[in-house]
Image (cartoon, rainbow, N blue to C red):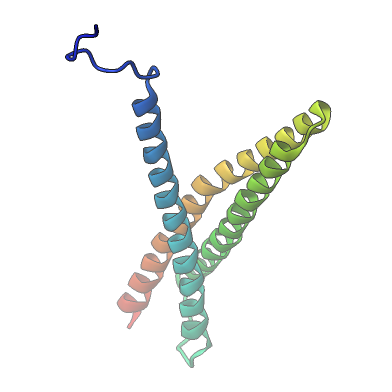
Length: 151
C-alpha cells in the first residue's frame, strides 16, 4: 500500500531545466530583435545622412565635417558588423546541424570546432554593433548641434 500524500518521484531538476530553456529561448529572441532593430536604425541613419548631405546646404565647417564623417563611418560599420553577426549566427546553426547528423567522430569534432568559431564571431559582433551604433548616434547629435548653432 502506498501513501496517497507522497508525490510521484520526478527526474531531478526536470522542471528547472525546462524553465531555464524557456528563459534562454526568450533571451535569445529578444537579443535577435534588438540586433535587427539596431541594424535597421543604422541603415536608416545612413539614409538620412545621404539625404541631408545631397541637398543644397551651406558650406560645412571642419567640426561639422568631422562629426558627420564619424557618424557615417560608425553607422556604416554598425551595418556591416550587424550583417556579419547575422551571417555568423546562420553559419553556427548550419555547422551545428551538420555535426548532429555526422556519424564519424573526427568529422563531427571538426564541425563542432567550426560551429564554435562562428559562435565566437557572432558573440564579438554584438558589442561592436552596440558600440558603433552608440558612436553613430552621438556623432549625429553632435553634428545636429553644430548645424543648429551655426544657423
